[in-house]
Length: 81
Image (cartoon, rainbow, N blue to C red; front, side, top):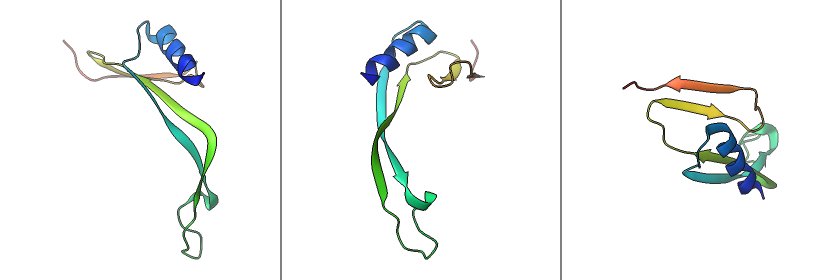
């Protein structure tokens, strides 16, 4: 199950349990916008893929990591003690 995979990768990367795991459904927007070239509405179509995120609190850093891009990570210092 995808939630189990997200939780496991979070634990492996951060050495702690995530405080929250959530997801959003995937969708396609035809013509890559909400209006076509004639100004008519374009209907978004749901697909069978989801985006998952896992989060937890940190005292002094904001870290973003991607399970799809395991070699890349961004870390931003947001305060010091």
